[in-house]
Image (cartoon, rainbow, N blue to C red; front, top):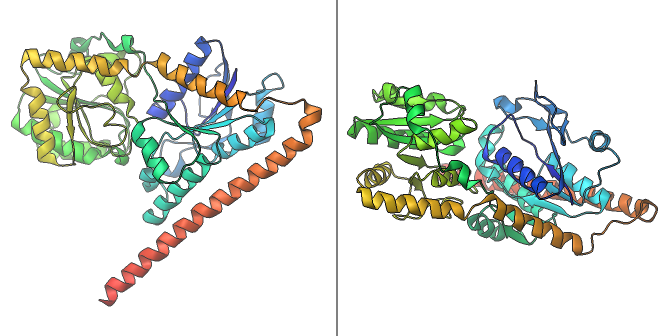
Length: 434
């Protein structure tokens, strides 16, 4: 099969979405399929085989993200005449997602869309009224999902959520997998030594992009309170982002800066070593659709304390492989950390065994096989390509229909956002009148 993966973001960014694309692409290739990845240009990136970089606007709105310029002509030239996709798989519902729909229409092949992100939780990066933008993003992603032939949801929580929002396209729960064996051993002691963390310290850990949507202010305050009660506790954080300064300020105010280790981005074996340096992993994001770092922590036999959220509840089982808190509350979070810390050696061993069992449910091989089965099923359902002579005019018609569908989807999303903005203004006027 020829598989075209298309995304607004990719390496050198190191988030869960970028990792998902790379892992699936590698697994598909190992299984004998041809994969081309279409992603934005970034400065100083070396050419990669079967990775097509297209023009992009760098550093969107002060972030590290680039926004792709959807230029079909540039893309077609880059792909060349030898590659005709059997499947087009979009990772976003806008920008290159629009291009993905046009490409699928041009070649008369199925379009698959993975609903990686709760886009409404990221509107703080965009100028404008936040509530109106949230409604816009929900409508936009829902409308795009209904233009696709299949939707992948990384978790059952996300599947149920987008169904409630009106997605009628068939949805398949396919999480991003991981190579579990790779995380079974790590040099945790060496990493502690490298960052001057005592060998007998109790290490609370977190890995991920340090951004507001990850709820890191709450997490930082909760961990700081725990550490105030436990002088031998340290906080090891892997990642970078705008919330780094917020975390530093919290720990400075509490007089805990010397026990805060902001280690930067971990890569390769160093990432595995970092997990093995931790005694417990903490997570408070409410914007995840899967939370790959939770799977990685489980594969490393590290118990997790987390706040219940979509994509989290499928991984963390309360008092089985960690502690799952029903609500965001600092006292409860501290109690969860103390519950893990006070486990006897026998109970901790059972928890670690359960962590391994959880991780095995998310193997990369299983996830790739599920995805490929959906691809194959879609191709059988009447999407066989026709000759150029037969399909020329039909291809042009489908392209026009795709363009019109995109316009309607954008218009509907914008209208919904404006209605929400109007409703908010009316409520504000009524409150002022009272």
